[in-house]
Image (tube, rainbow, N blue to C red; front, side, top):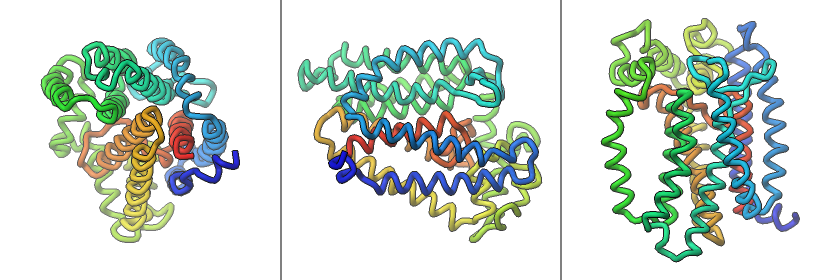
Length: 360
């Protein structure tokens, strides 16, 4: 344990804690004038505390042991993804188990199990030969590991989370030494399937989200409402913000889902461009440090596992902040460590623990 504590990249941990603190402040302000969400910041503090305990446990484990746990966790999470399809819809999707006032999202836990299993598989494939990942069977099994949970997540439907898995897979396979010809082939397949997904898989509501991404003003009081109100909130914060609990969009109820999906808009409005820039810098530095852990890992398992976590955080960061300022389509993707949510918070800190374990 002395060696683990001595060699860990503490900068990554400190940055994550800073984001969690900023998030709690933002969630408090978002719910201060709401009777239904006024206690969300207290629940967030509880979830951060629980997540830190979970992080410590995983951190103390050798990541080789953690990868074996993924073999067990993956099928368990698959079962949960099947069962959750029969749960009542919340916000148009069957993605959560409701336990009292608490909601559990199994697709969040699948992210960890998926990273562990895919990393373990890639490491196993390399025992068959350096170029084994480029054999047809090597790619086929990897794609099966990817397609099964993503198909179940699309049935919920949760297109945003499915894209997170695509980002994780891309970075992990690229890091594993997948031939550029296969990378280009996957990109071409994606280009061809996007129109098919749009017309035959996405619901009418999800299609509207993509349409208003290109032109939010076409439905300013309908599908384009969230995007417009978010950009107004971000812009009205100007340099130093309107002040905590004083944002017009946030406090007067114009900003939707403000403690989770649009928490960045709340922070931008009430704490200004300065705090928004600080958040972006924190993420960039944290992502760089995770990338560095992957590059300096002593073995392929650690390198691939760390890059999988990088891919997860990278897409969440890019998509969530991008959608609040009109650069990305709106999805239900939370901002890691900042947005309100117990399942995502626990997942984020466990993923971080994997990186800390590899770095130590």
